[in-house]
Image (cartoon, rainbow, N blue to C red):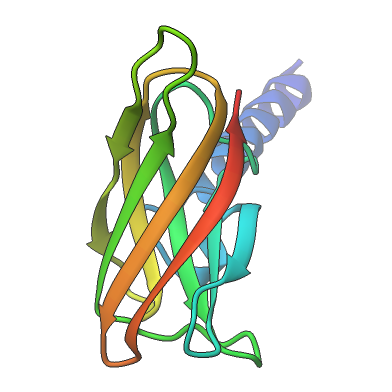
Length: 144
């Protein structure tokens, strides 16, 4: 009986440790998640939008925006902005849902938050200005 109880306590602790150990709120490059969409951003850079599960959804959510050079190394681009844009369709008005960003401990990786009004096709309108120059990217994405 004691062996079973000790085994169950150790197993429960191991499950708890595994569940808690996988999260990172620091925004490191290793914690950027799965790619939602990636594309050229000018100045020989690539912009990559990523989320925890590789999907953007209707509503409030967090994601990362990473700028990389041709070798895949993150590049600090300075100030970034992102607007999720959906053009007017029929009687529905145009929608613009801006994102807010904070820097992370990895230069070139930005932690973002947004609140998408609805699922569907959006244009991720990305702009940056700073040490890597000025540039922009428009990435079509589908929010679920």
